[in-house]
Image 1 (tube, rainbow, N blue to C red):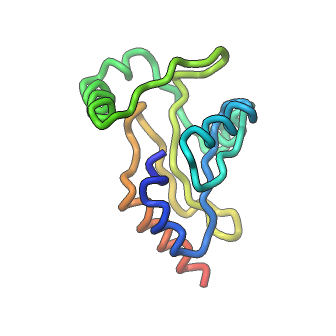
Image 2: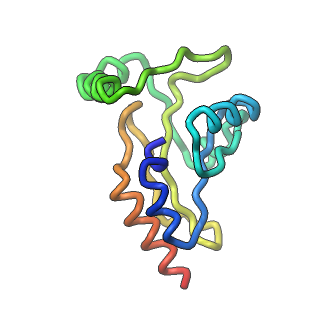
Length: 136
C-alpha cells in the first residue's frame, strides 16, 4: 500500500488511517504483517464497503490496456511482484481511496478506473490534511 511509504507524514496529522481488504480476516492479517503496515487493515469479505462506495470491477480488457501494462511493468521494475490469487479472490475488484470526516461523511472520493489507477500520496496527504483541519 502506497500510504505506508509516507506513513510518518500521516502520523503528523490528527485522524485515523485504515486499509480495507475483501480478504478473509486471517488473510488480511497475514497480508498486513507481511507488508509491515503501520495502520490497520480491515477485512470486508462481504464487500460491504465496496458496495457502499460504489466501486467497480475491471474486466480482462482493462488488464490489457497499455497504461495498465506499463503501470504493472513499472511496479515490477521497482521490486514489486504480483501475488498469485488465492481461491475466492476477486482479481477484477477495483479499489478506491476515501476520506471521511468525524461525522462519517465522505469528503474525498477516488474510485479506481483500472487496476493501476490510484491517487498519488501527495494528493492523499493534501486531502487528508484538509479534512482533518476542517474538523478543528
